[in-house]
Length: 341
Ligand SMILES: [Zn+2]
Image 1 (tube, rainbow, N blue to C red):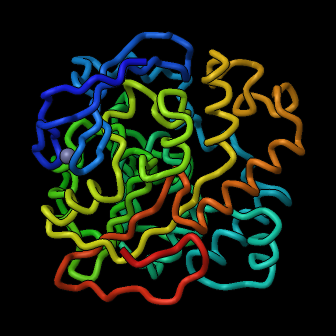
Image 2 (image 1 turned 180 degrees about the horizontal axis):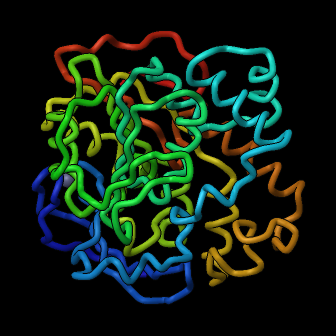
């Protein structure tokens, strides 16, 4: 591990003094290819030094976000329960959904539900992959949903008719009530431009939801180059809270609230990387929990520790709710893991 300093200018704040250098290895597929990263001494953003000219080769067809959502059961008891739970989060509270929220929660839908949507809301998912989230939202009664992803093979539709377009946010038009990045923002080589585009396309009362891993976390401090969410070279920028809010402010966006939603992955994934085991290896909990090198009680302990870190605002990923700066109403008095920015 190299930790010398460098003079690379931070692409978020411009600082070029005392930035720390790291060499990180690709460990999702175990390619072991090395990439230089720089950690800004001022805004703390960790960023890749040279963005590979062709990032597409690091997104094979087996990449998880391209899994076809139509292969999930669309009928039967499990599908019915999922629909009830998602409607509970997004539109209409219901008794079954409340029970399922406790028993088998869906963090993504719960977070989206905090954007105060109506079935008429115009929703854009940036970096939508195969459209799994929008498929579920359409099932829950939302018709004005569109996904965009420059890594799609071509424009397409999900099995229930959601339009997915091979286009970047900067090429989009229209006005949207919710523009969301679910773990796609960190993959983008131009975060400032992405936020500026989101700001220009957002309705006056709209929400831009950015879910990302963050270096303002225990996992980065403890695991450093073995932290499982580094994911070089796919993750071009690993923001600190400070750098994300700075980039948002420059785009005319203000952070209304941040919710930490880290999971056991920060522990079992980082432990695998530290042992030199790729995250998609057969022994990975990600691939098959039954073949995992960790016992179910160890995974439970990791989940418990993740919940504690979220409460302390030190989990390794967070959801930032951004609004146009002049429309912001600060959040107050939330449950653990939630803070006004
Ligand atoms: Zn910086």
